[in-house]
Length: 187
Ligand code: AMP
Image (tube, rainbow, N blue to C red; front, side, top):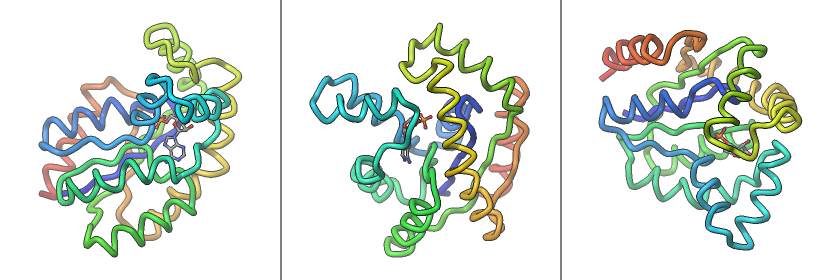
């Protein structure tokens, strides 16, 4: 089973992806996480990526695709892709990549949370996780990018009728239970 999970910044997609991966024995593939590792490693490439992330902008997809593609192939049939595609160009690119590699995406999960709640969540996360991109200026830009670039991706998948919208404004456990239930029905 192959899944994609999308949602605005702070919607909890990473948390839920981790839980789903554990429950259903799937590989959790996250472009954002790989990028953060690269930034932490302190390489020149990491430094450049870090500057883009700090501003809240999208990193060139090449930086992500080179990391996630081998993982997607290695775990073909058993992955949850977290936080990609982020725009229509990436969505089209991944469709082609999936087709060429006989990968079928069974379900796209879209976690929705009212924006004012997300801002508070992200500011809270900033205190706990110390993520460079969780400050008000960057958060504002990440939301602008989300509306402009990522929301059209939701419509892209809606037209392909493999998208479910999940209310992400609940406890982690409640959301996880609903998702487990839904995913349990498609395996
Ligand atoms: P995330 O952990 O998914 O919230 O991603 C954190 C940051 O990583 C984003 O704000 C982007 O700067 C970058 N990022 C993650 N995934 C992508 C992607 N598919 N395309 C471009 N940038 C990405």
